[in-house]
Image (tube, rainbow, N blue to C red; front, side, top):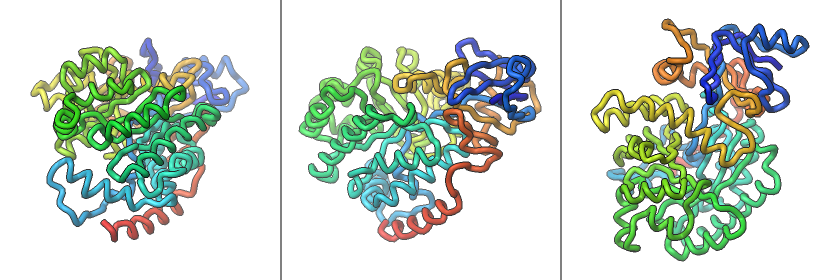
Length: 441
């Protein structure tokens, strides 16, 4: 299949750009790339999908989200929310306790559907739900396979719901990691070991988690110093900072995602760099929870790979990209400094993060990469070229402009129509269940 006759952004190492380009997709991989005329001439018998001048670009990557929070949109709470801890305790930790296995499936379906509509082709999730732990990751996997989303999943281990639930979380993580190692559904479904945060796990639980992972895997997905409370509690109870504590448990490394890192010190950055641990920043969530701006620019200057997620604040990575830019510029009071770190997080570092887990490149259009791409109905009133498409991506592109979404060589959305699931039925059922859940909030 040839997808072409559009402005082609490759995001490859050479920043190849075509005013009228095309990609040749064979099975689930990009086999060739070039001008539309050249590709048509080389492969005269291929089916042609003519995008009629639209943007063709790699699919967007969300490096951190929370599927379980899907019912939160429009939800009110009866308990006060005055700081970061009460946001967790009175909103999210109340919600996750109410989720059934049916809710987990619906949350995953609605999150994946909206992500696809906004041009996301890969999503890394961090799940929670203490009363529906067992089989929850396998349930989310079902939704990913139904919608066609490339995804990585984990369950957040925590002591906040008791030791029995924590042990169930450990088992769910390890069982799912082993299942993915045995069959990752054609490199579509991956797994990490989830831990909520240092301040909600005891040393005993970390020991159990580390023991369960011996000989299994070395990749963790954990919130790190998101709120200053995480550091205060770690210092008070353990006499060390959060990154040091995780390092002592041998949980840092190339396959681990340290999420947020809003309150890490220089010494902690040195450890993250030394261990090649990946960091994921989530600017809209940080601003919404008023926890402060993470030192993203400093971390990047130190050589730490910092990717971009949403923390489920939105499912539109173009929106997250915009806010990543302005948050850092605003934080340091320099209008020019936020732009390139935001671009680097999404278009360079997110593909680097995924390269740790997937067998072929994701997040770029080049020969041998997975055929994960999107088209945008974007016809700018200013020139777009290899030197300025970054600027268009921040100040012009939005999720609502996405027309087509191809994941693993298959269209999961065509002409804004989701292809594989009944969206209306799913949304109706989700609205019905959310209304029931809200009664207990």
